[in-house]
Image 1 (cartoon, rainbow, N blue to C red):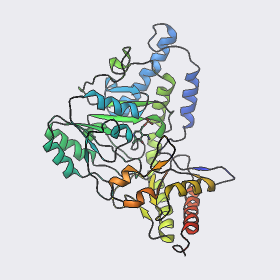
Image 2: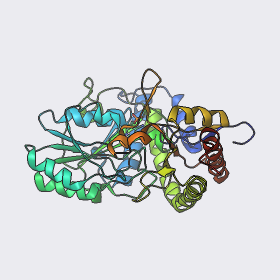
Image 3: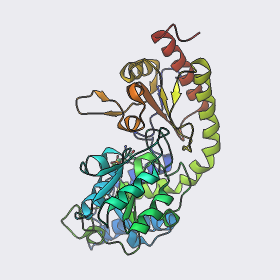
Image 4: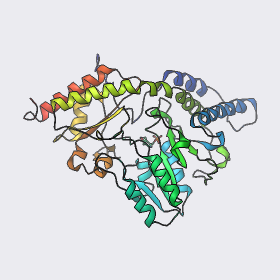
Length: 372
Ligand code: PMP
C-alpha cells in the first residue's frame, strides 16, 4: 500500500479501464443516435459498431459475421447454453457460475488436484451421453489461472460429433491463442477483464454455426441478439483489444513478479499452498491458501492493510462461499482458507512484494506458533 491508496489486486473480478479506452468510450457516450436509425446520427453509430466488429474479426481470424456483441460474458455463456435445447450438456466442474448455474443438470467433467480438466473423463462422458452434446470448457480458470487443454478437448468433441463452447474471459491478454487453432465452436469474451468498460461482451461463432437468439426483439446482430447496441461500450471493448499485445509482451515480467512474491510467502510459511503450481498457469493469477485461517478473516485483514483481493464467490447474502473450483480440486478445508490475487497493467512490483509481507504478518498474527 502506498500513502493510503489501496493496492488493487482483483483484476479477475474487474480490471481498471485503460486510458485510451476511457477516451473512446466517454466521447461516444456523448453521441446521440441509435445504430439502427437510417439518419446521419444513426449511421455514424452504426459505423462505430462495424469498425469494432472488424477489429474483433481481425484479432480472432474470423469474418465479422461470426462476431456477436452482448452485454458481457454471462450473456454470451447463457446464449450458447440456451441455443441447443435438445443437446445433453457436459461442463467442467470449474466453470464460471454463468455456465454452471444455467446447466444444473449437466454432467460434470472432473479436474485433477492441480485444477486441470481430466480428458479421459470427458471422453467417457462423450461415450455414455447421446450425441450431439454441448461441452463447455473454459480456456483459463479465473480462480487459479490454470490453463485448460481446450485444443485436445475440441479434437475429442469433434471425434464424437459434439460442440465445444469455450469461455475465454480469463485468457485474453494473459496467453496467446488463436480461435481457429483452438478448434472451439464458440468463444465467450468480456471487456472489463481487459481494460474495457463493464457491460460489454462478445460471442464468436465458428463459421457456419447458427444459433437461435437468447434475447429476442429487434433484428440487431444479424437477428442473433436483440437490443439497441451499446455503442460506447462496444467501441471501448474493441479499443481495449488493441492493447492486448502490450499485455502479452509484459507476461514474462509479470511471471517473474509473481514467482518472487509467491516464493516470499512459501519461504516464510512452507505449509502455505499455491494452487495449480504443478501445471501451466497464466502469469497474473495466484490462489494462495493460508492453512487454518478462514478466507473471511483474511479478506478483512487484507482490506484493513490496504489490499483488494478476493475469495470464492460472494453470494447475495454477502457471505463468502468456499470456492466450487477448489472443492472440485479436492482441496478439503483449504477451499475456505484461500484468497486470490490477480493483477495487471496498473500493478507495480512493490505492491505485490508489500502484499507478500502483509500476508506473512497476517499469518503470524493468526497462527503465531506457525511462523518464526
Ligand atoms: N466467465 C468468467 C471466467 C469470468 O471470470 C466472468 C467474470 N467474473 C464471467 C464469465 C462473466 O463475465 P461478465 O462479468 O462479463 O458477465
